[in-house]
Amino acid sequence: MRSPAELDHVHWHDLTHAYGPAEDVPELIRALYADDDDTVGDAIHELYGNIHHQGTVYQASAPAVPFLAHAVLHAPGRRDELLMLLAVLADHDPQDAESPSWPGSSVAAICAELARVLPDLLPCLGDAERAVRRAALRVVAAVAGRLPAEVRATAERRVDELYATDPVAAVRADALVVLDRFGRETAALDSPLPEVRLAAAMLAAERSGPPYEERLVDVLAEDGAEPDPGDDGFPWAGTRSQEDQLTDLLTRDVDAGLAAAARWIAAGDLGARGSWLGRRIAETWRDREPEVLALMLAALPHQRDTRASVHCLTTIGEWIERLPEPGADLRDALYDHARGEEETAAPALLALVRSRDPRALDLVLRNPGPQTLSAAASCFPEAADRLIPVIRRTLAAGATGNGAIALIGALAQYGAAARQAQPELLDCLRTRRAAVVAARGIGRGGIVTPEITSLLHEAVQSTDSSLSAAAAVAHHRLTGEAEPALRVFEGLLTAQGPVHWHLSSLRPLGSAAAPLLPLIEPLLTARYEWTRMAAAEAHHKVTGSPERAVPILAALIGPTPVGLCALKALAAIGRVPDELRPRLRYFASSPLRLLSAMPFSQVHPDEELRTLARTLLTTD
Image: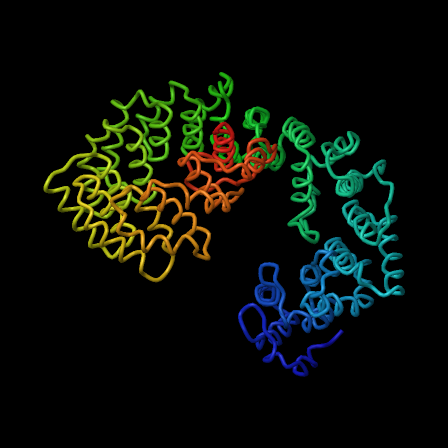
């Protein structure tokens, strides 16, 4: 250990942390000895921000370790927080220690320093405060595999004593985990202490992997229903908390996870843990929506606050369209919530709309909002005569941002019937409210007037490149004149910076964009994959030939956002290289979701991936 008197012996100005030279570290360490608790807390917060920034460690991190260890033993308070700072600084994947770069890495240096000072910190395992004992156990666990034999033997003996005698069950459970880090398997599934049984079951599940033995699932479900009542839920390495680790374990085995979530919900869904686990399962596994939504319906009456209720209702709304015929019980519950408190009414109404319950339409018309109007336009296409006037009034009332975008998107679903909303779209363009999507909507409308062409011409001159491109395309679609659009895109495709957005925008020009081919063709070999994808798609749209586009798109296809876009483009072309079929079969048949949800996406990307793969597999 090193005392504050030695801080000036370190050349901190030659070391770096998250924000540059580490010259501020000595003062932060000295502040740990202040009598004022707020000063100490602020110093710890700053140290987390610079020598351990979002999980990353730096040159200055290892030299700070012996000083932090001294502060644990000699500073006036917050010993548990200082111990946890030491533990997270040394956090590493044991497999990393086998990599060639490990000996010279910052985390290797931290572990070496922590292993040297650990003998001085072992008395913390006998501290009167449970939080200090728990944090000290995590410090031991962080370097359990890096200790010299003598220190390891002493540490293991002290941990064994805690496991056998500590009066706090949570501390015994932590000690069991540390013994496992030392390579000791302890038969504890029959322990009389639920916390110890749970820790033992989690360790056994980690070792075995899914599917878990029935006995393990019983323990995970029974003893995991209620988190440790203490308020010192410190994380283990690689996880945010034991609760998160348990959720991860149960999510890996979908049947075990559903069984545990059902039991937790039946027991009252304490902390919304069962409903949260159900949501994670729906996000991770395909085709489990019926079971998950049944869990959400069962969980709704147990929610103790508005936030938890909104969580359940939002989950239902995200997945209810995956049910061929949502049950009456579920729709009735949504209808009741949609007429209830304002905070829960919005997600309930959105879910009710997506269930295609006829009662939803009247509620939307009485209390219209951009998101519910957009969903209603999709789910009730036969109600155009009722919805379009409301969408128009909402736009005219001054909707902006994502709300205006959603409303204009709703109009796009009605085709020719949406032409009656041209005045509102023109006003959006004129006032620059969601002007890009308004310009696209005007272009689709097929109405040509001097006012419309004048507004589009003005928008083409905009310094906003997205608006300029959208207006140029709309002008072309309405008038057939290609020259203004060609001038705009020539400028955009030769400008500095990413061009894939502009390549995607010019697709509606089709063969009229042929003069741009000399600018498009070099981009087919661009380093940035989004640019190659957009260039290939644009090349096909302009030339009508798939020969150059197909190999580029096929090489990009994968379970990634750009891979999905490439798959959409390939589906539009309708040609499938034979070598792509095994990948498509994997996309179509995987029980796990291969893509995560994306903000503002009308359809879950993973569902798009699977549907497109199935469609293309039927293509000759």
